[in-house]
Image (tube, rainbow, N blue to C red; front, side, top):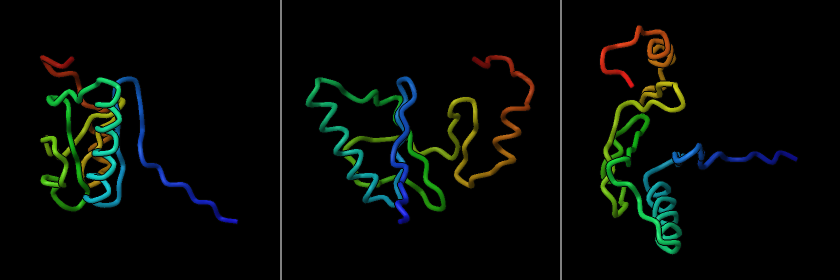
Length: 102
């Protein structure tokens, strides 16, 4: 029996990554999570909200919060970009430190 599982979210420390196949699924998932947060007295850190889409712009996916649309995210020390580029990930890890880097 093939019981394929879909990865729909990743939680790491205070970071949450939602993985969906389309905008409507993202809006639904984000909405459900927002309701659960509000129920327990929590709120999103609006300045931290980011959305990245592969293949098309992610802006305007139907969620009530405004999330910054980005072309790349640094996640756990790895650079993820909207093209899924291995070169971008490797270059990010191998570049020399820059003045002002955290």
